Image (cartoon, rainbow over all chains, first blue to last red; front, side, top):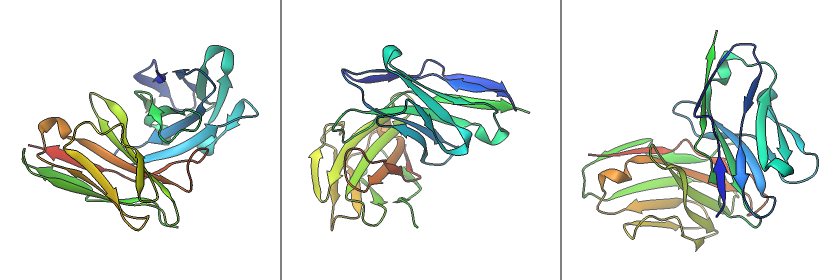
Length: 113
Length: 114
């Protein structure tokens, strides 16, 4: 069965520090991959997505993610975190021909000033 | 342009009552999805519409849950005889077509069953 694992439930970083959020998936082929962010009381906003091609994907708000087929991973990175990045981050996969997204459990990010 | 809207934003109901949750997708989006976000289960897929048809209802947790979509636009998720375990945030998303398309999410309806 398809699944998504986000190993870190909570992460705390200092403002200006770099960030990496981990995501691993289990699927027989390469799925479509997404990162969403959810601020308190808000819906989900798409940060970036990977369908094919260049394995390093640029997104909004200065985020990027790298697809590594050999590791079945799609980790999200940001070189310098801002206080406004505090939110919950969800990795999701859409299996080929998908009509639904399968989400990880989420990683809650706290940013210290 | 306008995004996905959902109403009500919050709903408190008593156990055993029926509730209706509404989703207005982005105009022109043919695909519509319902998800549920709860503390114990994370984000779960419930049902998918393509136009007015629902080819995938695999995520509906019981026959108390049903959904319809009319005119290829507005969708209503109905929960009959609500139970406390139905308490969650119900999220709606839409996309222009299906497959390969990004899903755009609404702000959700927070349901509390007392």
